[in-house]
Image 1: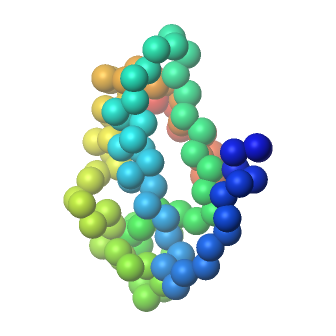
Image 2: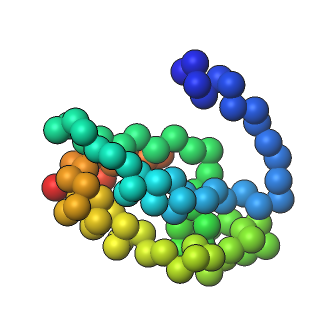
Length: 97
């Protein structure tokens, strides 16, 4: 809570978040613990109308990630290479093992 309380709120016309970059950062972490869990906190879904039902004009990237990253491939990498076993999101828990 101490860290999140220092994050200032912002307001933009682009409601969805850059979730892909956060997941990509986790893919490149130096995982040292045998217990590997990711908890994703966010106030909005990721970019792409596949992930939300907002009007397309509320998302600067309605076609999805502007860098072409694929969520399924990224989660597979976290499971198989990083050995992350659980991902907690605002949508619920995703078991990766």
